[in-house]
Image 1 (cartoon, helix red, strand yellow):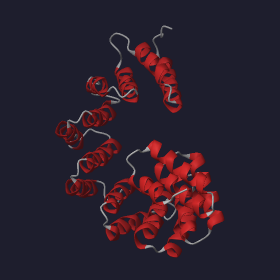
Image 2 (cartoon, helix red, strand yellow):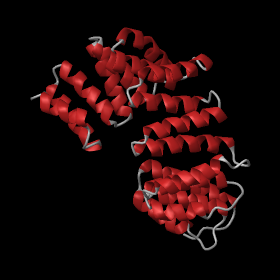
Image 3 (spheres, helix red, strand yellow):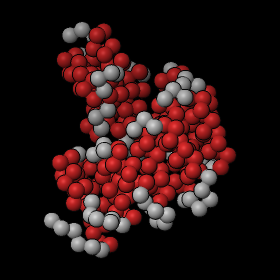
Length: 295
C-alpha cells in the first residue's frame, strides 16, 4: 500500500510499529520499514525509521537515520538513540562523544539529557569500566540533584558490584522522597534478602511494593523468592508461577525451579531451569541448578 502524506499517517505508522514490535513480527516490521522509507522523509519520519531499523537490529541504518534528524522536534531523542546505535556497533568512544554533546547542549530537553547520563553509565559498565560509570552518575546528580532515575541507576550499579551499603543508601534517598516507589521498595527489599540474608526484614518492603504494583513480574518474583527462603513453600510457588506467567525471565526461572523442587515436583523444576537456559544459555546459576539437582 502507498502511504498518503499527512500527520495522521505518522501517527498510524507509529501505532503500527508499536503493535508489530510488541508482537515480535519481524517480517511485517521489515515490510513496514520499506513502506515508510519514502524519498525525502520528514524529520518525524526519519526518527520513526531509526526506531524501525533498531527493532530490526539494523544498527548501521538506525545510526544513519538518527544522524539525519535536523535541529528541531525530535532531535534530542534522535541524538540519544544515535549514541545507543553507535554503542551497539561497538564504537563506544564515538557514542560517548555523542552523549557528551547532548549533555552540554543548553537547548536540549532535560529528560533526554538525564537519560544520556543513564545510557553513558550503561555503556561504560558493559565494558567493565565501572569506575567511570560511577563517576558518570556523580556528574549527573550534580546537574539533576536527587533525580530518582539516576539514584536508582547508581544503586543498581553499586549492587551489581557488591557495594550493598551505598546501594541501600541511594534507594533510601528515593524512598525518603517517594515512599510509594514500588521499584525502589522492591530493589531495597531484594538487596536486603539477596546480599544480607535479612529475609524477615526484607519482606515488608517487598509486600508493600507488591501492593502498589500487583502485576509486576519482578516484584512477584522477589516476594516469592523470599517466601521460599522463609519456608513458605506453597505461597512461594504460587507467586513464582504468577511471575513466570507474566514474564519469561531467566532469574524467575531459577527461582521457580527451586520452588518446584522444594514441592517435590522435580521434573517440572528441571524443565523450568531448562526453559531459563533457553532464554540465557550462558546463565551459570541455571546450569549449576541442573547439574546439582539430579532427577
